[in-house]
Amino acid sequence: MRGHWQSQTRKLNRHYQSGDGGGSGLTKWNPEAGCLYKVTKGGIAYYPAPSYCVLNNGSMLQEIFWNRQYSASGVAGVEISEEQQLEYVPYFPKTSDNYYIGVGLQDVTWEAEQAFDVIQPDSQETVVTFLTGENLNSKNANLLKLTYAGFTVRKQGAGNLTQQEYKDLCNALYVQFGNAQIDGRGHYTDQPVPAFYPENMTGTFTADITGNIGFMSNLVGNSGPYTYSTNINAFKYPAFTVQPQYMRNREWSGKQTVKSMVAPSITPYITGDKGGFFGMHGFASGSGGSIPTGVYDVATGYTYFVLQVLKKVEGITCPITG
Image (tube, rainbow, N blue to C red; front, side, top):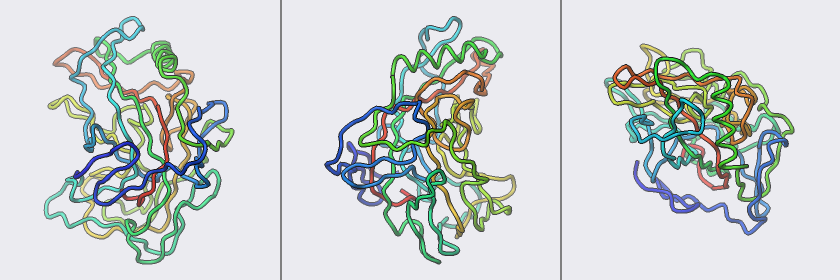
């Protein structure tokens, strides 16, 4: 992936404008206010993106490795790795990023099958509008960039975390990081769970004949990996987006056309038991009722987990495709 982020401005395939509109300064997100569906700054409204990739030091990550340095977590029997800073930025997978897999792959493009609005489902506000035949990278939108503290956690043996261990770990991280910082004024739903919707995107896709795609939120939802590789000691595809191989024996290839799309609110909670599994997750500890799926690595004798805690939300202007 060519280019990198610098502060709030990123040069990738095109210029990304800063969200610094001269409005209100930094604020703190009160988790009791519920999900975040919009940030305003300098009279401009910024919305969650429909789809995200994750950057570390300016490069796109397709793996999060668990062969890292660990130390005591404060929870007996559970160790935690050093923090990684993970920046989630608006993105739709590109062939040029070697994101897709398959033999004889044609360049993957995303176009509007019909005129549609990208909707923020809690507020029913429009994020951006596309006309029939328009490429999804042809228009800018005001979107949110999210910065997370990323960790891997390990526990000796093949057992999962207990509910109490997970709750204590989330509480300790919340004490360490506190409420997420927002660059501007946050607008909230007063609900801990995003509005229900049956899918993130509908259309005609080569990799999914149902025409209904729910983006994978496993790692960003702290619920476990989408898939993993013990050969390279890594969790695969941490992004909140379509996956490289969505269904067995079907591949992303050529033109994909979109009929509808949503940009879900961001839940305030680290854990999925309070925040649901439909969008990006936050910073506040939940009840620990939904324990993430771990991966047992027989070579090391540990079970590994992922935890990501939201630190900062800021507005940028760019296409939804990145």
